[in-house]
Length: 406
Ligand SMILES: NC(=O)c1ccc[n+]([C@@H]2O[C@H](COP(=O)([O-])OP(=O)(O)OC[C@H]3O[C@@H](n4cnc5c(N)ncnc54)[C@H](OP(=O)(O)O)[C@@H]3O)[C@@H](O)[C@H]2O)c1
Image 1: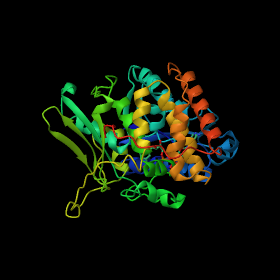
Image 2 (image 1 turned 45 degrees about the vertical axis):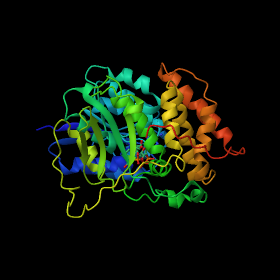
Image 3 (image 1 turned 60 degrees about the horizontal axis):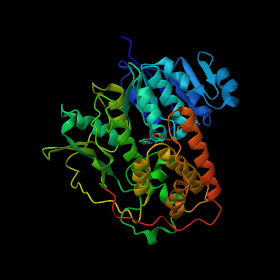
Image 4 (image 1 turned 90 degrees about the vertical axis):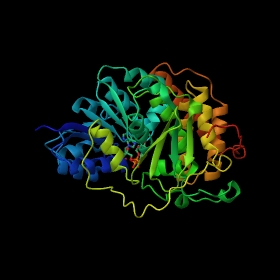
């Protein structure tokens, strides 16, 4: 029997390596036909290719191509800016586990090829929403989220046939390593502090985003793009105000949907990314997993509390960018990528991240997001603005406003 053909872009990252574990657990069901990454970890790529024997190995960085081709004579080694997007032609399901805006070509290529896109790379959907929605209308194209919260909502929505009866989407947030701290207690946060996530083990960019709650803000925009429009079969047409965030430190309830009869359906499982990855690969079937079972005797508490927008203003900024629409989410995403990189390089303090994002958004030029070129230009402009702001004396931290629907 030939399995579902899977391509993994970003195979060397946290999502990528966990995707390979899911594939390895069911070799009769899944066949890895292609993998790729930036090329910064060539030894790991070679190791993966020797273990799974894909037809194609792709790297964004052409300087490592010759070495890879020599070490993997049985593989078609592709390199350069279009190499990862070319993986879309090699599989039924393309997992996009690339980090950041760099994942946009993979997202678009998978959808435009009429394939299933298992999307971890939320940044491409957030920055290029209108363009991705267009690509999503390609016959055969299907977008299934990998993010655990959106995978949860996807599952909860399947509990109901009438999308008009969806009242609210409730995204859960772990709260990150600084949950419960007040803003004034966060002035001296270090890179090591921010990278110590209490429940999830992830790549550095999303871990920092979780510490600022920017990740949850990006996920609000992601949920709006995924479920707030009629584009997908499960499109629930919820408004931005009907997408809420609640902090749930145990990370067992991955998100919830409330229906018009005040019934809430939640999805629960252990905080193990292999589970939502497996869901996105196997949907509408389910994987048969040897990992991730919960021991209910140990789940003694499920707590919920409102997010603190004073200590974590990034969440408010995400709602504002989503409300502004057009290229504002692209600006927010680009400024955030610049901010996180600067923080990890110890050029920007953690406490100054929201201020940088707000100052960048204040300079948003209002350009529309009608084409890929528009979005790429918006990303370039916003990065330039954010970089110029770093190093100058930044304004104080973004001030709290209390009217947000969270
Ligand atoms: N980690 C999680 O648990 C998790 C959960 C939900 C959503 N996500 C989302 O999934 C995405 C990946 O996150 P991650 O934590 O897996 O990141 P990560 O561990 O940092 O891995 C990033 C991957 O992207 C590749 N990459 C980086 N820059 C690239 C470029 N310019 N062109 C092509 N490939 C590039 C890297 O390749 P090299 O290794 O060659 O540099 C690596 O394979 C992010 O959008 C994140 O928000 C992650």
